[in-house]
Length: 107
Image (cartoon, rainbow, N blue to C red):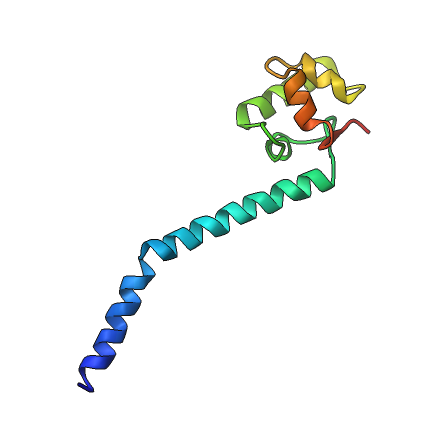
């Protein structure tokens, strides 16, 4: 029994390390980190005129392609004068503007 107990403990530890509960906890931690990043983005508005594509990806509803489109528009047309000008970027309409209004600035 004394030799069996440590083996059983090690077997349980190995089993639990790869268990769905452990994997779920890792996934949950990643989701919490993403949510924290989004909250920070909401707390400090991102300047549309100075933000990098990576900065813009932290905005709600903005992925890599849309972030690149915003940077490309800014390079081609100059600085945004007001937040509403972001609707001039192809694929960003009034609904997206409403989502972004509190997360972005142009100052």
